[in-house]
Image 1 (cartoon, protein in one colour):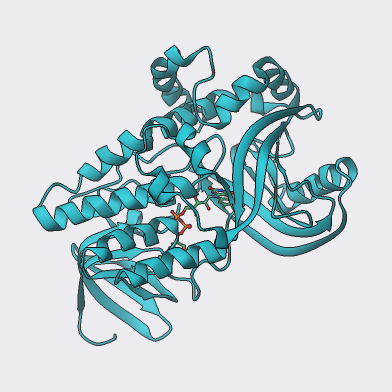
Image 2 (cartoon, rainbow, N blue to C red; image 1 turned 90 degrees about the vertical axis):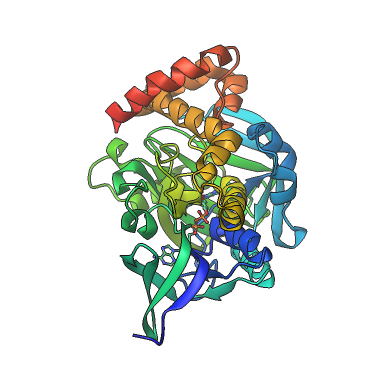
Length: 404
Ligand SMILES: Cc1cc2nc3c(=O)[nH]c(=O)nc-3n(C[C@H](O)[C@H](O)[C@H](O)COP(=O)(O)OP(=O)(O)OC[C@H]3O[C@@H](n4cnc5c(N)ncnc54)[C@H](O)[C@@H]3O)c2cc1C
């Protein structure tokens, strides 16, 4: 055991976008803030497609958030590419071209930049250090190469991803199970012939219950991957096998991409079931993927991690400064993006029915057409059915539980 117990106002587990954003807000107000990251270097390895809609698009996707202009304005230094279209591809190859202005970022550099901002604000960062468990209400045990230490805090933040240890340790916070999550695999591929202006999303048995993607980092490099839900997939067929089949049939045969070299291989979980039920207790909260703050119909979680982190930071500062309830956090994030996440989860439940076969996926995509598909990937009930949003959410909540 290392030395005396150190005391902090706030301990944040996980230095991803959610954790670093939370830490920055709190440290800037002068509170003793510890940011704990199990990786030895923040952001590496990268677990991300690196796709991010522009601020203008985010204003449209999350219309109730007042923070987008301030929080989601990404420094040009981490932008690798700019795209203007997302092309949704049906199982037979029909293309639905949806205008969407977006950037592709260097995610490692982005995460490091956010962590540096938290450090500049006064936070302390421990890398190569992992939260092991909670030893009492205010104390947690950390492990690193140099041993175990107990640290104490007034508030504990779980920004530690979908399989959050904080959620597991703190009674009253909701925990996600692995079978609630979409599993994903991605290769960063160098090759010739990528269309740098268009992101592709492929639907059907190529990625059961999810989709496959090509996200161009430029003309000669792209993130190529897929996410699927295990309950929809062929038993015992590996993720790697799905991805290799996708690369062979689509990348090489259909799109004619040549001279392929795999630069990086990753796999991870994406929480796509909508927000967890309880994200806050009297002295702890969950943010980002740990709270399942991900847009269910497109799998994007960077914007909500940034906005959620900012909200968490503000709620914690108010709690420490004036004793207001920490539970205000839950009301705040629900107001800013809760509706979109819940609607997205409902839409995904409904879309799960056609996703059971290629023929029905094909039929559903054609019936929906470009305009409705555009609404669905933006997590909103498609025109002209917006009035049905509330009953849809109630009804699909039941369906969702049944399908899981
Ligand atoms: C394959 C894939 C592709 C994706 N593509 C996109 C995309 O293109 N666009 C998009 O918007 N989103 C994408 N996402 C989702 C996005 O990456 C996440 O939503 C986002 O990273 C959430 O940020 P976060 O800070 O909550 O979590 P993370 O970025 O996962 O950060 C959590 C951090 O906590 C650390 N940690 C975990 N446990 C502990 C512990 N016990 N102790 C200490 N540290 C711990 C981890 O090492 C990690 O650094 C993708 C996800 C995957 C898996």
